[in-house]
Structure formats: structure tokens, C-alpha cells
Image (cartoon, rainbow, N blue to C red; front, side, top):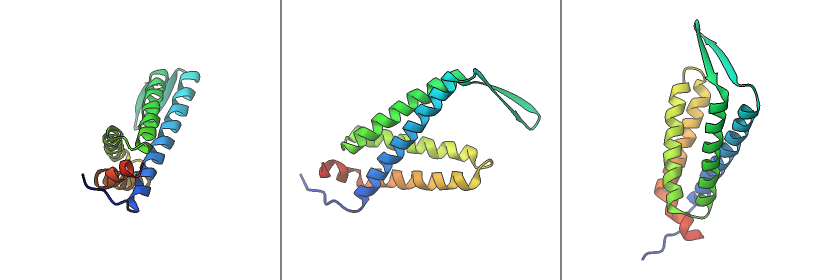
Length: 133
């Protein structure tokens, strides 16, 4: 078995874990606010009225947030499965941002760029984190 030399990309893997951790914590907080707060959210967009079930959305955010935090912790520990899950989450994040480009073009492009960097770091240099541990 060959030894993998640690490079500066190990820091990007830690960056990916921190991004997942922060995103997970924010999702849990958003979910708790939604579950504790009002039961409906109304949005008027181009003559249409959308009614969203805030409690259901809140529970979804709590579950996703907890999964993000657990994945980040496992990523810090160098777990291979965490790299796979983190890559899937980053891909889903980038695709989700494509839907928001018309509403927030600059922010969406920044998040997509960060997601691409995270995916690259995890795919190409993910083994380094496991070997550093």
C-alpha cells in the first residue's frame, strides 16, 4: 500500500467539512424557527399565490441539517462514506442553486463555484484526510 503525501488540499477538505457543518447548523436553526413559528407562509409571485406548509418544511430542514452536521463530523474523521455523502450534498446544492440564478444570480454563482471546489477537493484529495488522521 502506498503512502499518500499530504498537500495543501487537505485544508480544502477541512473547508468542505466546515461548510457542511455551518450549513447544517443553519438548517437546524431555520427548521426550529419554522416548527415553533407560524403554520403557513404566503408568497405572491407574478400573480400567483403560493401557500407553503412551514412546519413540514421546518422538519425537513431539521433532518437535513442534522445529516449535514453528522457528515461533516465524519468527514473530519476521514471516513470514506462521508466523502461520498458530502460530494452528493455538494452536487445537490449546486443544482439547487441553478434554480435560484434568476432570483439571486451573483450569490448562486458564488455558491456553485464553492460547491465545485468542494467536489474537486473531496474527489481528488479526499484520501489525504484519511491518511493524515
